[in-house]
Length: 444
Figure 1: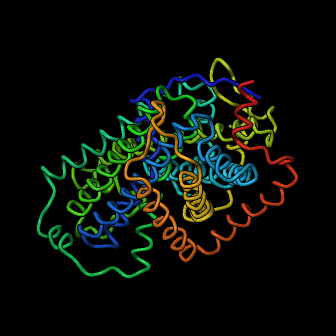
Figure 2: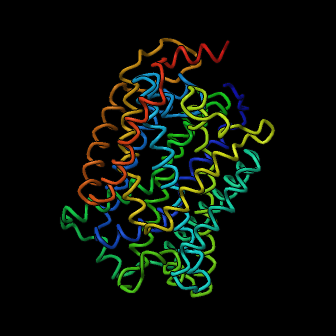
């Protein structure tokens, strides 16, 4: 099965995708919680710095692998090439049943939370609004990659503009003695508090790897992928650090400020109640951009599986004109809506994040297994190899352990669903055809 995807994502479109997806609900929930629980500017910035380093190290690995194998699928392709078709199938199984619906559901719930806060509606409506949001944005993604690209660019600009307004306003109007007291606290946080901050920070950085799924649609991958991945992570890290500082300085002493209404509370402190409503609306737009990016990238993994003959090709038939896969998107939407009805925001995160982190590390480790080409003008070579992948794998191991201890039940459920993919792989993968052979078959 070969369905050609058109290279339409240039440097700025790819960068916009990273910013639009990563700077989502996490930026408006995590800084508030981290600032409140860690109680120190140093610890807050340290957590963000650690997560930025981890993400950048992983991004360097993904940039090299993406230029070596510029095919739709990202991690699926890397795992297939390094560890074989069965391992790749289990990753695809995890994407279909855990990662993609879990991330979609979490973003839908986050969007619904702020949308209802915008109108003062009861939180009992969160599942209804979340499902409606997912369905509407899925319909827009089915219109094609051009429509999705416009949404990503607009929402990326809206996010950065909102954060910039907040940070500038704090510099002009925020600060004070109470803020100074909070910012200079240096006590070592407890292990549960630090673990919670790290988990929240990882979720806030989540999604940068989705650009790897779009490698086949990226213009000049060797130039575009490393610039968009690493540059996007640096932008996101600065945004998160700046917004956390804004919260510490502007909201010190306001114990009534809630995590769910972080931006609304901050806007109210700086500009008054009316501005708080406007900023809450900006959050809705921001989260919508993240949700649109997830819905756009997910079907590319199923396309890679269909090309390998382990997923029904009829479910991943791309519209050649719109470059969208309506049936695959509907599968993702259906599973996400089920999760919305079954769990809370925290439970959904606990369900999908630990397994995602594990497979991120495994797919990045492919760079250690596969022989590196020399002097290939089409391939980006990660600098300081193998340091980036070692740093990334070490931090991945820490994150998996923290999630397993912090969310044991949800972690076990997610792991059990993934484990079911192992016996299924023996039924579906009839022959252990290598990725190299698959690529040769498709070229023929």
